[in-house]
Image (cartoon, rainbow, N blue to C red; front, side, top):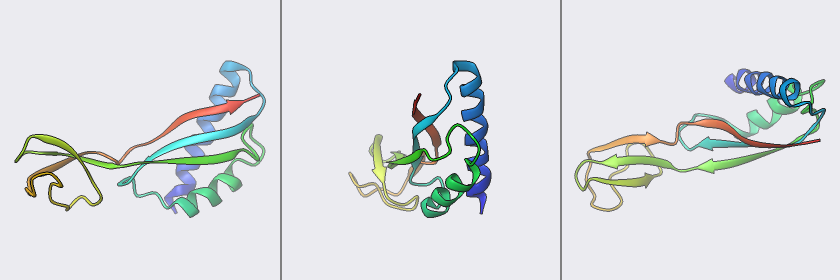
Amino acid sequence: MHEMSLVEGIRSIVLDQARTHGFSRVTVLRLEIGRFAGVEKPALDFAFDVVMRGSPAEGARLEIIDLPGQAMCYDCMTAVEIASRLDPCPRCGGGRLIPNGGDEMRIKDMEVV
């Protein structure tokens, strides 16, 4: 379950930000996760609850913002959204797509007190 190590990295960021900005508690943490990031959301939710115990984010609400898969079609030279890395271009039907988005995972923001 690599989601546990992902959340451990998030915990480290939360602790660093708490020290830097002097907040004591995170009430909401928003993550942006791309369609192709390979993150199991139920496992991430579980790991978040476990790993955040004893941290400023203990009990925080985790909100996940889904980001679409994106690719550049070299047949019609258009940036398009795709559901799968192997999809044809939804605009022209071409097959020369290079995925260029949707594999990211980042903290969008946090509500803190």
